Length: 332
Image (tube, rainbow, N blue to C red; front, side, top):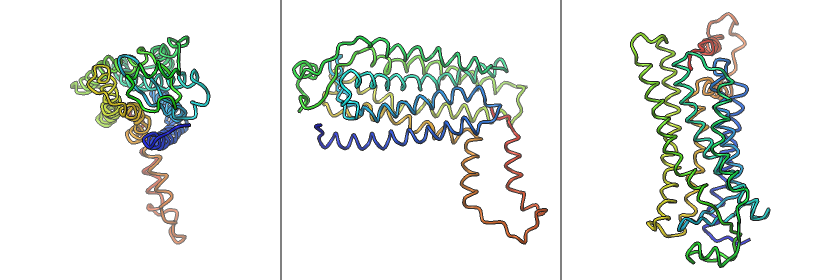
């Protein structure tokens, strides 16, 4: 197995980021399944869809650790992870599966915004409708995997060197596989309609909440705006991850960038979202944030004095505040 100093740094980065992505999303799934109040039920479907997708993305990233070389509408992937020992076909399939998870997680954030707009308009949204939306949206990234099931792959040194214009050193020492343009189009171009739908729904939500005499009280309106803000923050993460990665990819196609070192950056940027998204969700969804605060507070809280009466209001103050917050279920 051949690796240079840049490969070693890239593998170290991938190990840290993917491990954090798995841990953060696994913890978020725990919160979704065991700490979500009943009033969040339809919304938790979209949260779970995003979190499961990003957890699986992190696993695929850890297995492949792909370096993407893209020149003249040709993509040569160099696999530095464990998948290289499984063969070329399996390496490429895991790589495409990883990209399709990235697209699905982005679609899931859009669906959360669509759900919020529809639920405010109709004042009801069945859980079955949330499952249906997630399944139908998944058909788009699934086409990425289905479309390449019969793809011809090659590890021929001469062919791959021609595809990379002989710019890559030690190419014969790597395990390489030829990719397709369809996968890159899904990742790079689908963000345009997704963003359009997402921000249109955001505009409609805020307009409805600002309407005079709207039926929600002030507290509920503020909580809805907080969740919309969370979705907005999540949608802005790809601006610093997916967009730069797509820009680098497109720049190599038009010879604006010709150095092969950018092959490390494309997937590195794309892989930041699964690590950041769960933290944003945990922070903005009140029951999850409260659970963590209570968990940390219970570990640091001093023991109650045995001389303090159980009837003393100070004894129940913290617990009463917690119960009061949980009874206020109008935050969605």
